[in-house]
Image 1: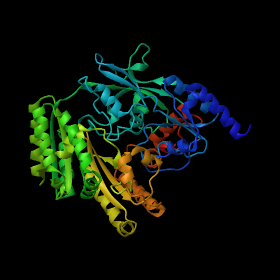
Image 2 (image 1 turned 180 degrees about the vertical axis):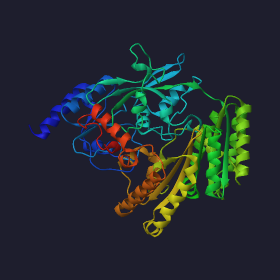
Image 3 (image 1 turned 90 degrees about the vertical axis):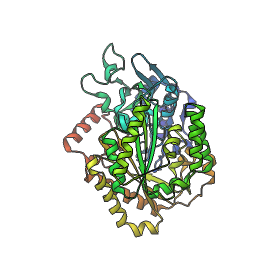
Image 4 (image 1 turned 30 degrees about the vertical axis):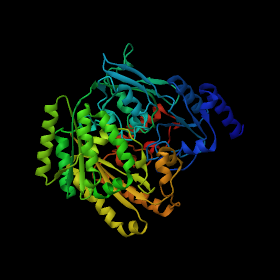
Length: 526
């Protein structure tokens, strides 16, 4: 039997499971769904879109039984080749139809969703319940999915106090390579429901951060908590990186902010260029809607409008924090403690426009996935303990200085995003910008009005290869300093950066759940 006829037979079987309309084999789809924000390589053989756990189970079982590689794909917002095929004839399983919020259980305080549900959809479903998940998504949550967030792990909303996405999930339903369905946490108990994470060894944790190497996340359950309605916002300016990073670490250690993040001067300048007055106006309306009373909306809205963009002109390292507490008194107390830390570390308070607008529009457009003129964009990052943050930043700066002439010649710019996770972790994320052609995923994801105004650059392989080389150098240095990563995918050197005993166990688990290496081979370096 030749390859083509074998493929046709398998794809016909898959169409019988999900419906003919949900097996995509056209060249455009097979290219689009196989590329991420940074990498476009081998197209998929087909893209299959199941709508339920049972359909997903049957799709995986039938594809792997015929030795086809299967790869899970969420919202496509990653940049470490997590779902980019390494082999011909790979079938991408797009989870976008598995997007339901299955159950909001207010009595037992959990919410269950299908893993193709976006963070924005989950946020909207919980919006008027007075409840939330502790960590409630990433900034790209308009497209990024719950399953993608669990596969990659990640952070932002709620992370300053409640940790990464992995720290909020309690149970999962996972489809393994042979199509079998595994439930984790309390749902694994014979009479259980997914209300609690722990019952014997933590099987839920095993499938978090695996970048789709160990199985397909079908459903996930998160614990719920009461929404915290008393809010304060603060923005700060520091003249040195040491003062800015020390301030963030102190805010983190003392658990004062729900979210705390910052930019270096370069990234700040990029953001100022990128955002338009029209998006300011849209964001302002969003903030005024969320302000509570009409009086508060007018008062705060007029302050934001009056501040405009000029207040950022002389800012160097800017730090922004959101405070959420049960009481107004508690929120104000946290704010005063942050102000004291800022003063001690030679900072000054500036207009708090950025955190106010961002919190009112938590899942805005993903126009930031390209530079302000239409440049390509890619980050590299590490999570560190507070004691290693300043050394990590200085090490990255040293690497960039060693490549300064080359970067200037190729017009490669670099900035930094900083963020804290709970009381004990700090993200340092250098971000590259360079002139290069965009791909179909950029065109599909960026707002069309914004995309059409961007410059369109020619392909620039030399600059892209240089970015890749420097990015890998930074990742290696971060690993040398003891840093760890979210979103390992196929880009970070996981095998080289983990102790042999741990690696051996991961390999054995992979062998057990996917003996023929047909689920996303190459992810985690497996």
